[in-house]
Image 1 (cartoon, rainbow, N blue to C red):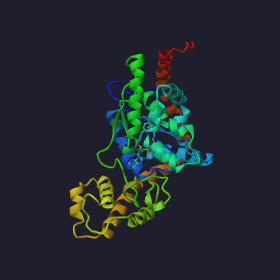
Image 2: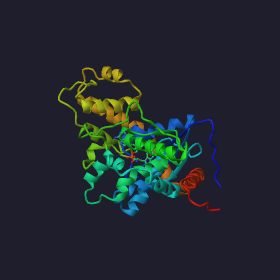
Image 3: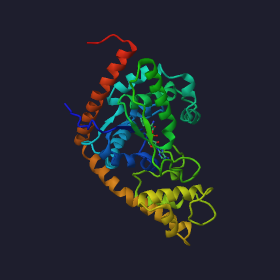
Image 4: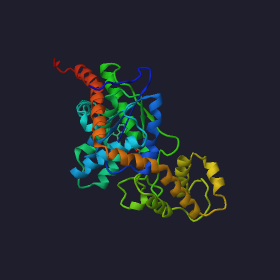
Length: 338
Ligand code: TYM
């Protein structure tokens, strides 16, 4: 049986990512890259949110493959199964069970106001299913089942996190203080990486134009080619300023992967054209991601190790959430099982 080696003095972090294809540079810079360093200071739990992914129709074999890749990528991006709990959401049935209870404490109107629901139901007008609508309740269950203190996310998930807090507060008002109110943990830079083809929109794996989005497993040539084609402005001056969405986005990306400040980036490219700058961004990103790809390839070749990691991860996750769920069932008035 797996044992949990969390330090009781430390705060708890929970986050998750959907396995709908390889991670984008947005997923990476806005979320996953920041998860690794948090492992030293916090108790961390990270999941592959496969239950969430079926709100959009998935091809089963592809979903299985994407899920395994997402699990390997979490480790390749710096998550350590010895320090953190890493698991597949579908392996822990407590998430779905708690989600049902919480859905009875969530208002229809609240869910209708979720911007992601509005966007996705426009995008998938032929499949506006109930899961797409109740998705934020499952996300609240993911977080509240562990009584997480902090949730590292990109800006696009902030509204869902606020809803999770509201659900927790409502439950606490009825049954007394029980759920911890989770706080969002949004990075200062990279919280919203923009599309390379339309820098007023966030970078997303569902973008129809493959040049809009860098996948973290793209090879060096592809990364450089996509950056070279990035849409910018007609000014030809590498400067961070209002109205220069494309350049601001590229400067932010370059600044994060090189560790240079925006001012230093401006100085570095003073008097140089966008061509040089785009090439430099592409090379810096590709070099930064090269070790991730190498580690990913090694992990994917070791299925037995991966299985051991995700089985133990799910066992630990279940231990924690079973306690929460039993207490919730008791509070709402269900008959004791044993
Ligand atoms: P998902 O899978 O869409 O994205 C995973 C993480 O990546 C961030 N992100 C971005 N950050 C910056 N720029 C971008 N262009 C960009 N695109 C995505 C997201 O904000 C997210 O942090 N519902 C969640 C997964 C989830 C979850 C949870 C997260 C399920 N349960 C509980 C936190 C807590 C989602 O679909 O993320």
